[in-house]
Amino acid sequence: MPRPQMLKLPEVLTEIGMSRAAFYRMRARGQAPRLIKLPNGQLRVRRADLDNWLADCETAAA
Image (cartoon, rainbow, N blue to C red; front, side):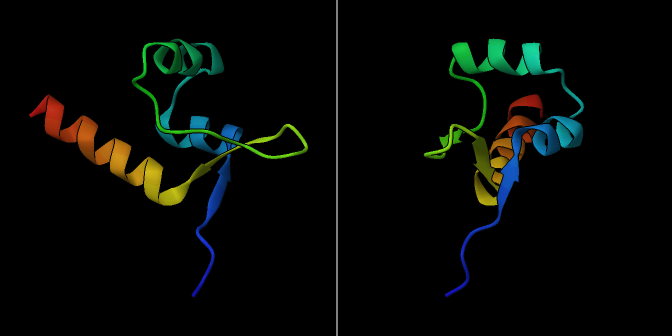
């Protein structure tokens, strides 16, 4: 079974066209995709989590 793709935070921010500050404000409100903190302190987002979050945003906007 293949491992899920993990995106770096800058990759996520580029894809969604959002600043880091705006992303963290959304995260503080519980409105951002789930972040995973690696043992070395780096942050990642699973591709599936980002895709699901984007789909939820589309549904909410409709």
